[in-house]
Image (cartoon, rainbow, N blue to C red):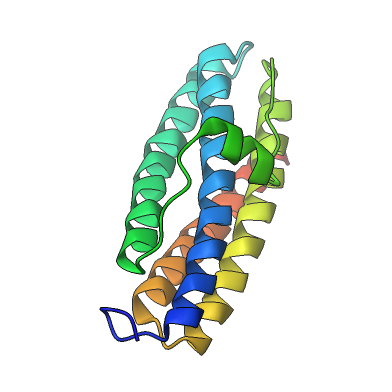
Amino acid sequence: MNRIGLNMEKANALSDSLNDLLANYQVFYMNVRGFHWNIKGEKFFELHVKFEELYDDLVLKIDEIAERILTLQGVPVHTFSEYLDISEVKSAKNFTDGKDCVESLLDSFKVIIKKQRLILTLSEDADDEGTNALMSDYIREQEKLVWMYSAYLG
């Protein structure tokens, strides 16, 4: 058992999955920062603000995920080269069109939510309520965002 009373093997598997999620969040975060900086067109003011709201939320989640890994006695990955090697979310370079940016957000959320659902299953099996609650909260929030961004696209 580790210091918080979880099976060490299961906690290590959770840490590995959380590191994978962390890498995906970091790439997603940088993509959204780029969207915020580079958006052009008639929806500039609306999307510029929405992208800032999103990256502010993502950076908080990144910190929470890294701290959860540490709580499980793991080590968070912390280099961009690792993030790029691990992440299923790919870098979105030179996006300026609002529709393309929102489509990329939706693609990224699909990856992130899928990974969080897997972690939810692992944390349930490990009797890890802390990780379970975190993933549950993220999924609930992000499913609503997916609905809203999808509605934006029509």
